[in-house]
Amino acid sequence: MSGWLAVAGLGPGNDALVTPEVQAALAAATDVVGYTPYVARVAPRPGLALHPSDNRVELERATHALTMAAAGQGVVVVSSGDPGVFAMASALFEALEAGPAEWRDLDIRILPGITAMLAAAARLGAPLGHDFCAINLSDNLKPWDVIAHRLRMAARGGFAMAFYNPRSKSRPHQFAEALDILRAECGNDRLISFARNVSKPDERLETVTLGEATPEMADMRTVVIVGNAETRRVGRFVYTPRSAGGAA
Amino acid sequence: MSGWLAVAGLGPGNDALVTPEVQAALAAATDVVGYTPYVARVAPRPGLALHPSDNRVELERATHALTMAAAGQGVVVVSSGDPGVFAMASALFEALEAGPAEWRDLDIRILPGITAMLAAAARLGAPLGHDFCAINLSDNLKPWDVIAHRLRMAARGGFAMAFYNPRSKSRPHQFAEALDILRAECGNDRLISFARNVSKPDERLETVTLGEATPEMADMRTVVIVGNAETRRVGRFVYTPRSAGGAA
Image (cartoon, rainbow over all chains, first blue to last red; front, side):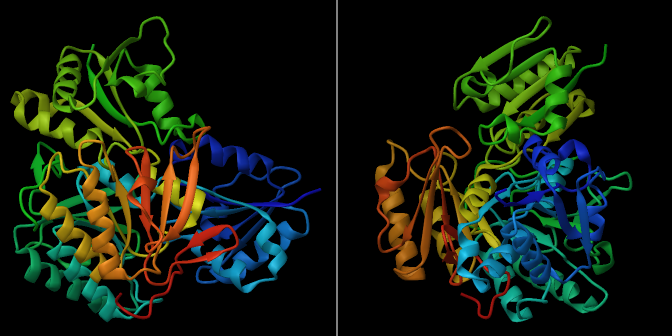
């Protein structure tokens, strides 16, 4: 039997946002690998082995998955959201690059999913309806100076912005610094939205101005979206018009 | 009967990428509105009226959809990709803002879909696996100077980039100018990928360096992805590592 590996995006949490392509891969798999809460979303069945693992072991998990696929298994690496956006796809290719050359001939596919910022944007209205940036605010894998620089460049380019992993207990001051940078660049009136646990039963949405925003409005389960200069409210929605007159 | 309106993302073209949430909305609708090729993807059935319309009439289409929902119909506005990314959601809210105040109380939902850049990224590997920008290169609704400025800010921020609507017959020189800006900012060795008709039978993927890229590699059915300084090939894939050492 010839092995294969799919890195599949489960979307933000609600099964109504899982594509048929991902459902079919899960139905065909012999092994499912992933962070424990994502593997818990896959229904057990005879012939399917579930391999949950901890957070922050992405490379080991990817290597395990590649090893099983090379041995002839049908392996799905489950990822939240879209695997290509701050999730498991890049880790898989890092492991592929570091592994034996014959792994590069494996049947490997990345199956897209609904990423958190687009699920959040849909629930809010259309705050990312014009040019935008996606930025991971975690400094696990990059220096904070790089993040601060990117916030300034995104603001000066007039982009809307979506932030993943905005705030954790290990670095509580950085999101406060991010808000300070944004206020200095964009002014106090710019809209900022906090979307927590989007598509789940305890979803929470909140939109305020940068002047009103506090660091406590975000945690690691929150996606933060900052509008551009044209972003506005209409009724209960927040949206960014399609046209732009100026650069920022 | 109480009306409702959903703006639904059909994904890049393959029905295996349409979410169950969108399928359920289409099954419940009395009316489907949209650009002709997208409406053509919806199966006719008794009780469902299809309202195809031309490109570039987004506001009229949105107003029509809101009018029908206000009259008690169940209306789905179909959009390619994700409705919130250079698609119908912002046009819907523009029409809502311009329309009668009572429209703001309507049951309106945006249903996310797989947007073209993330479908393209998945087929290529993981070129958007780190911080990135999404930019619409069409100058229909913004001046070219704004676009050129955003390309420079994105490059100086060290972002990967995805471009929608890179090139049309009415403005063939602009994408050449975009490539010149990118070569000046990022150097000739930066990887650039052209993904045409992603997920469709005639899908075409091509990755070259900026030095090798020519304007003719893109048309309006192409999503263009430019890597950051770390973006590399492994086997037949292109990916961007999760870590970053410097700003650009």
